[in-house]
Image (cartoon, rainbow, N blue to C red; front, side, top):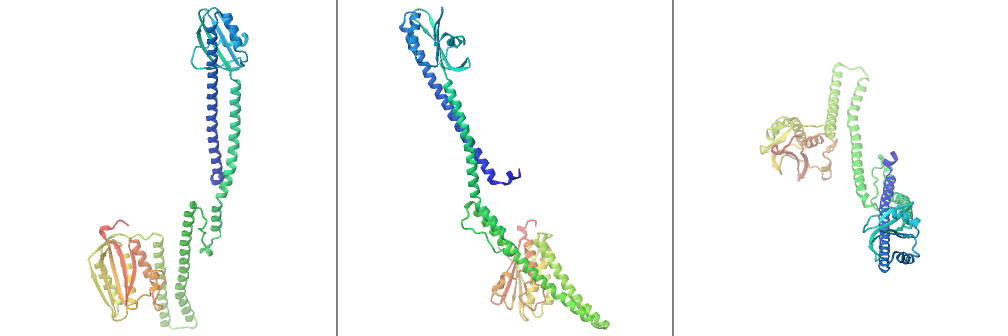
Length: 456
């Protein structure tokens, strides 16, 4: 049964064989019935002819004896024909012999316009009966039959030949169908071999689309697109692993070096206190990196579910400016816009907008300006955070939201803030984008308005 479930070649071959069997069986049945009907028509025509002959002879003779003699002469050479003519006073004529014709007379065939099939002495006949008026007085009952063994033998042989032809056709169709299917499956086997050559180190390889049958073209395109996504995901995973190792190596190496130096000789209590304080800073940095990575992992697996509530964006931004404004040394923070309400998780949105605001503060030079504007745009609420200063290079715009990306090598951040902001915005069915114009960099955070918001 396992082979039947999995072998397309076997299933199609059997299907072709069954189809051929049904077609040829239907044709055989049709031709057999057509031949039988044709032969019945020929027999009826012959029997009606014999009745006409007997009736004609009966009108020409004036006595039963003369009728029997002349009718016997007329039937000379007619093989397979039996006939009886009975009058009121008894039998008048029996052909070819009384012994052969007697069972026909005893069968009691009734009058009819259509011949019937009748078995007499192990032989099948087509028989018809009629009455005729005789010149010598009275009505005679005529019964004529024809032996149809040659017809039945022919039909039996025809059916036998048809069944042999059906068996041969089914076998031939199965074999030819299997060969055609196996040949037609070559592209599938080529695809399987090409897919078998692909490994983690060969994700750049693609299945050739040239010469692929139209029925498989969509499959090949989808498979190649899947390989493209896998290659991109694998590359990002590899880069992420390398970046994570690099980020964790620095604080761990610092902790190790400080510990080794401190153990090199005896030190005072104050020196050990300073060492522990420095180590605590590194531990806090490691803790933040790990917490941020866990947060992003939850977002990647769809486990970041916001606790939705109505939030007014302007008051929320005012609180963030008040909180993070202490970090803005000689930088002007301005807030403007409409009083819009969105549905979202307060803590998550504060973190997302706060991460972008901190990023703007870190990259705005002294005397610069950061403007926050809340406005409606295309059915969404948009928070735009623009800062003056050196703009983001054009070739780096597409990766600023990737993990561990730090365009400023001297930054103390982990490079996860903007990645977290994007995850939070997407969890709220929103998005984040960045544009550069002149010496101004603007981050646009979009969220569905409260009126268009549905349960997250």
